[in-house]
Length: 94
Image (cartoon, rainbow, N blue to C red; front, side):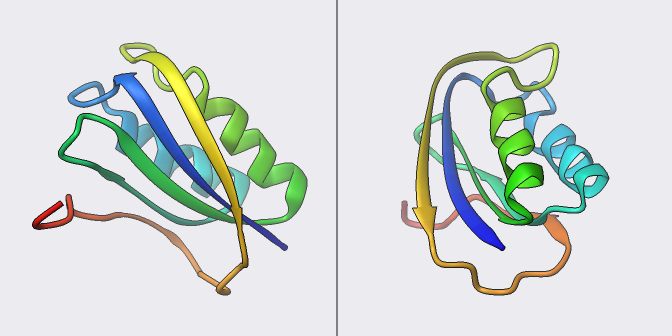
């Protein structure tokens, strides 16, 4: 089990990035969450089997068809044992 925090920049708001990420994660059986950040980036946390998490990270480098991904930052973290994958709201006071 591994965990990765991914921050994606580019034209990634309003292009179904979060919903497509959720559906992709569900198909890969990866747990975690995704949310828009006020600075125009998208942040996702994903946990699961290493090869499945890596596939989701690889997907984030392209995103859905309407997205234009300029950069992806990936950080390793300790897994928390998340279950399911959800779209979270943009954090307040960011």
